[in-house]
Length: 114
Length: 115
Image (cartoon, rainbow over all chains, first blue to last red; front, side, top):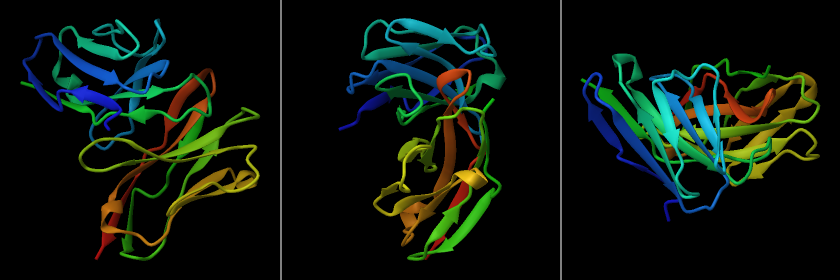
């Protein structure tokens, strides 16, 4: 029944070693989002895709990239993770891009940097 | 720009009692909405309830209801008959502004339900 699935739940990587987090959805939603959430803070939007159109937030570091090869899948690539990138990464989807569209979140991937 | 304020860092409630979580907002959009999300310690964000500014009646979803007062710019979440499983972080969020579908989140309120 899971509708937004994130893999893995926990990821450990080394400082500077590229890492990819994955998200898939069975809702056939047009929009997919990636958020970063640090401990005791609200989620922070990194970027979103409306279909194939990529939209980067102005303050998202260049170190973070994303790919959406098809409707169902979206990936977050961190090219050279630093200690400050340790966080929970949340993927979300919404049917459309609009003010009344609830976003449906996955369970998140908790990223640790050694 | 949108601004969401949750002034209660932590709240405690006895099981089976009702609790109100506060949320105030500021926006220049003539039409807007408010979402509430629940985040248990396991990390997933669960959509609870939504209300649009032009909705005539306060939204209700099971034990959750929104006390929406536009004049006061508040959209408080009321949880009736609290259960132990309600213990979690709760976020109020508003979409819109310069980035139409982007959510602006409040700081969150940690709710603890005591048996």
